[in-house]
Image (cartoon, rainbow, N blue to C red; front, top):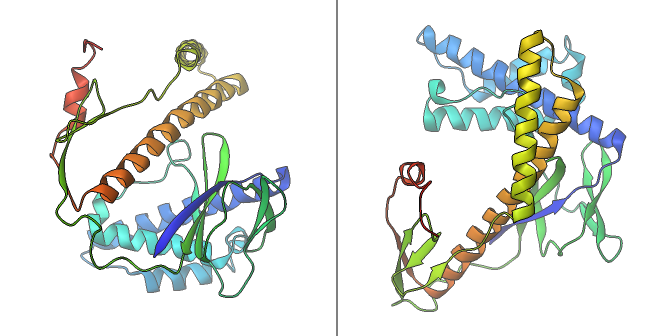
Length: 292
């Protein structure tokens, strides 16, 4: 089976700068490719991945910064764009803004090459194309052959996600084929099952909540001053936004961990899991006065 392993990277300042340049190139390729596809659609034509990859290879002779990232990184970006346009439609695909997009780059792995190794109790390293070995926080072994890697940046941290083939096969029959459960999502309690289980946890601590509120007020004051003086965004304002992003990243990580563990438990114990189709945004929009 194919499974994912995610690790926190610890690149050197020079490596982090290179990764930022690669991410900027991927964003530029995505936006340029999307612009091309929309222009073709206006004329009633269609542009596919093969033609865009050929044009990108020719553009490297004129724009040398396109040759700095590994070729597979930009090719995978065009593949993702092609899949998104086919699945959702060219006009529904969004632009990747510098402030709205969390950088991510996918790289296929070479067979037989050593990509990940352990150096100490909590230290390891991963080998990235054109960049060499980058240190990471060792939390668990990959447990199989690495098929591809995705490097991304969120919450002020770089991370790498490995797609690993662990050598196991999916069971032909569930361990409990007659077990079934229904799942209802709520506002006061996150998840309630038909068996009476109530699953919930706190995703933010009181201290973090106070810190976020203080940073939001500071960011609001800084933005008002910037607009009043028609000035550019200051370094202090950027630092405030970065601190907010780091705190919200912790909340997102806890929420994702809760969802993954609960989903694993439900799938392990039940052959059928029924989830009601709810409009969560409508539910939470009027939940300000919910009684805890």
